[in-house]
Image (tube, rainbow, N blue to C red; front, side):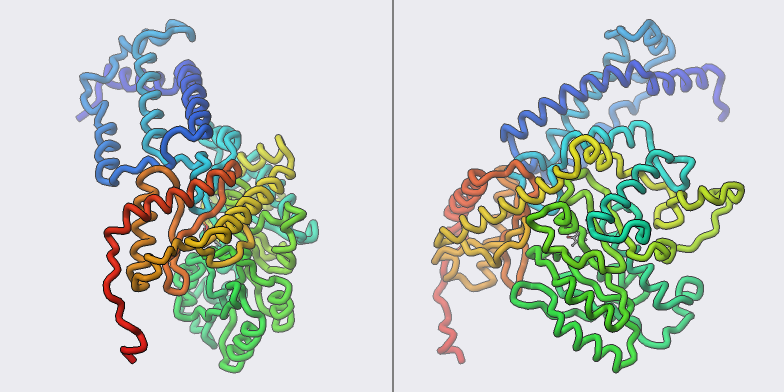
Length: 538
Ligand SMILES: Cc1ncc(COP(=O)(O)O)c(C=O)c1O
């Protein structure tokens, strides 16, 4: 079937209408109104944190909207669209309809979304991002700024390299000797850092794959609390998840250097090839910071690659009060550092640093003659696609560059200081009660705790755990608070991460009250049955 001239003209008109700057102008005004009203309402704590709806209902509603313009009859004709050429002030006709629909769709997105900016959001390690960061980030999306080679994203590249230099200095790397890259998330940054380590330890692997037959079994020595992306990396990189050797933790869940040393010696005596030692700053479960200097001493002594996952805790380096937690970070060969966690940027903007500048090219090798221009070899250094898994990569540093330029790096120290302080306040509140129990003293803004009045303690552990899961589900579905759950040493618990600097002591007191209230309504579902006396049993 061939397309007629008039159909082509109609298609052109529809495209022109969709690209019209006047439409953008009108829609932007609506956007500005809506997002501001939303921000005010969220910060004044109206409404739910999570707008809970069952996934099936949400998908159905989303699907319905995709059918709105299914019928060609209802699509605007060129004649309709030509009305739009009457000038920028026009506020009637199809353009106005589009703006109205745009407004309704935006409202739906806000109504069905998750309100991380609400101070009662105290959940995952995903922040209530700085609102203006989102506006800087919008430039990326509206004008589609990407990178791979310098010439397609000159400002994006410049911004990224400037930030790498500045953050690297904060970490304590020597200027001029280190390098880095930005990638889509901490998981990908872990994979990329470990890929570089694997390539250096097993040089034939990249070209020969498993055919290269390791002379000795490759292993990773890893904090027992490392993020699951490390295990995934071992699987993806052909090291094998079973070849992860977990280093024991102390009672505060920090890697034990003495145990690490024993494992290094054992691995070496068994002729294993240690690809890397992986430490955390901090680890996900309770936010424990490994003793980096002690670990770095061992890695230097035994000439091992040290990879530190500082996705969450890296930004402590901005804070005078908390930078001691990441002392020694600059001694790591590779460091993961997420800006979309404790620098309060919108997702995703993760940095990976290499202490030795030369290692920036160790992760990837490629032939891409259509991308890299031999007539300008000096520019190739700025073609960042050589260093990342992505080819087209979203310019995901605009937000951070904008906020840093606008407020200065002191804001990042403030955010760390305030959220860490709020976690301490929560810990103190827990200690003042008899029915709550913190499971650790927080080192950062993560606190894991249980609700255990006498009646809960009287339940078998399995029931206690189920109670925690059910209570949390009720809590989040009610929209009153958003917290997460965790399981530590077989015990289910609640876990908060203070990722909204506007969360205060009053919110946390209310959280405890709300948990108590929900527990009292849930109690009937957990009748205490006659407990078997453990002594009698044995
Ligand atoms: C310590 C740590 N590393 C890595 C990650 C993964 O980061 P991302 O979610 O950016 O992939 C997380 C996520 O919470 C984390 O806590």
